[in-house]
Length: 192
Ligand SMILES: [Mn+2]
Image 1 (cartoon, rainbow, N blue to C red):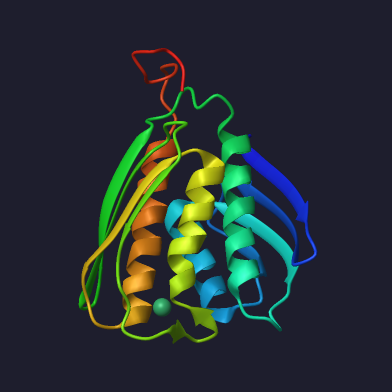
Image 2: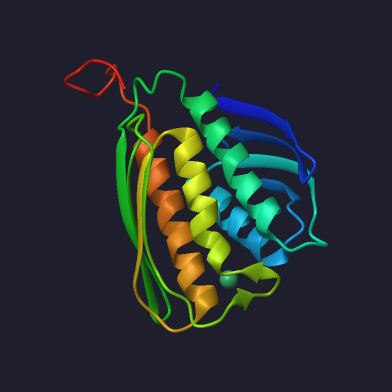
């Protein structure tokens, strides 16, 4: 079983989450931001992951703490689920078109945290999600998990499509990267 279970409580958010890397593609729970739940569901369905989330955040302020802290907890859970990062393909990359938008993700389960995020949005928000939080979310996730993560929207017009395209690209790239192999750690150093 490759599952990460994390509980994290601060004055801003209280989050309890489990992430099963070999699930049925089911997302249960809510982060309190409707559009972001839609993205979490896309992550689960397209990655074949099961994520169960119970959280309460200070949404009366704005969505910032909730989305960033959810990224932190997902990153912690991913790191826990992957243990020594052995026996996986390690790399994944994927393009996803969504109508007029094209999203791309390449990632390396490297143990080295890095984010390259190349996307801009037309509007400040989609629903109650502030578009600037998409980058913050992926930064938090990549840094906690210790993955090298590159995300790019090559083109597009509609922010909903652009964000959904990179989430689905991330889901497929991660699915590829965590796919199990019969080999050990894929590194000339022998350790990640
Ligand atoms: Mn949609």
